[in-house]
Amino acid sequence: MKSRSPARHIFVTGGVVSSLGKGLTSAAIALLLGRRGYRVRLQKMDPYLNVDAGTMSPYQHGEVYVTEDGAETDLDLGHYERFTGVPCTRASNITAGRIYSNVLAREREGGYLGRTIQVIPHVTDEIKESIRALAEDGVDIVITEIGGTVGDIESLPFLEAIRQFRQEIGRSNGLFVHITLVPYIRAAGELKTKPSQQSVGVLRSIGIFPDILIARCERPMNPEHRDKLALFCNVEPKLVIEERDVAHTIYEVPLDLYRQELDVYILELLGLHVRPIAMTDWEQMVERLIHPGRGTVEIAVVGKYITLSDAYKSLYEALTHGGIANNVAVAIRRVESEKVETEGPDTCLAGCHGILVPGGFGDRGIEGKIAAIQYARERRIPFFGICLGLQCAVIEFARNRCGLAGAHSAEFAPDTPHPVIHLMESQTHVRQKGGTMRLGAWPCQLRTDSRAFEAYQRSIISERHRHRYEVNNAYRDLLESNGLRLTGLSPDGQLVEIIEIPDHPWFVGCQFHPEFQSTPLHAHPLFVRFVAAALHARDERKEGHA
Ligand code: GLN
Image (cartoon, rainbow, N blue to C red):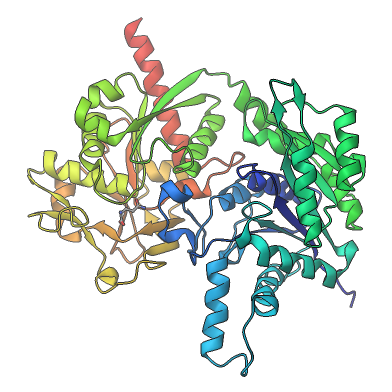
């Protein structure tokens, strides 16, 4: 039997400042190598001490991205999946908290046989084990992104672990990619390479010598900049890659790196065959995104974390994907739900072609979301409610169509006379916060005579969840008899997963998070239909005015 060659490893670090787009760059590299015919897996190491991102506020961390197997992870995993189309698992996001809790649990079990537990080797061994875990099952290339910035105290064990790892697998089986900032100093009218040199200096002092340097810059570098970086950072000039701020969309990043043949250099360094690549579909998608043929639709997203662009990352991307599929640009009007409470829905929502209420926790701004939904329902504006958005739609319908004054979710009003949304039976005894919601992919059965079925074109679907509360089955009959249809249920019929109002142009709510499965090449069917409905509303309105 022919033995497989060992998995190769690429380690991505960042220097100078945070927010350089290490996640996007890693995802773009994975896309290119995947398209060269290699099985690639991605992984993010986060140096913070939370065991996972699930307990962190969106203000701290941005969106919590949920994997199929129910891990609550860093939003970079969303980029990984959207670029490569390959689902991640819980092994794709490792935090220092997870590493330490594993080490400490083993220590309590007596797993270290009386030894003193130390960062080196015990913590670094645990990190290396998590890297190795991704290299199983015929994977050709593992890309490990180290979160944070080189020089942070908390990143040190991770950097030491990847240094050891590469030492152990040998130079030809692993490489280091370092991403830095080359700032433009307006007063001097120049790009500056010094911060990058210093960042590489810090890496070298801990024994890591980058093979490839990716320079993030807002202005183009000239050959002197490149030569200087190559000389001082000890990399070949062709391995200094320029990553300029993209003009239109993040989906240009892989094309940009492809033009500079980064993928070819990586394969050569790793001793892997440079197989042919096809990028036409991606190029066409980007072209369509930049120059859509059917103008713009405006969608209002009514949420609580609206000032933070990262809090609804996957959702905004999925709307963009829905736009690509419909050949239309989607302009997002970000509406703070509390503002709907103080200024009224008309002021905040007039003129938009669709209204979306996303997921969320906590009662701040809830009444604004409910008012926005009532506005969408009564004005017949396409509406899409996701998770908490579905729950608010049920509350609104119960109050205003079923005569249940004071109907609410037990999450926000434990004493409500009509808890139309209540705690799932399985959640009633849960006391611990972390990792205890209904998480990950669950099947759902659709009614065939529904908008949901129209979108999916099949009756069993699988979607990702992250919630504790659900529609209270005691109110199902009342809701249905007043015109709300429950068009998606868990296969045992016990949990309401999708609601619709048939007597409305497009009014759909889902208990799951469809945005996590949308990619630019395969927009999620519900987003495709929602944007199509908004486009229809826009065109009808235009005709109405003509
Ligand atoms: N807070 C709600 C629940 O726990 C909704 C969660 C969400 O929107 N992700 O059920």
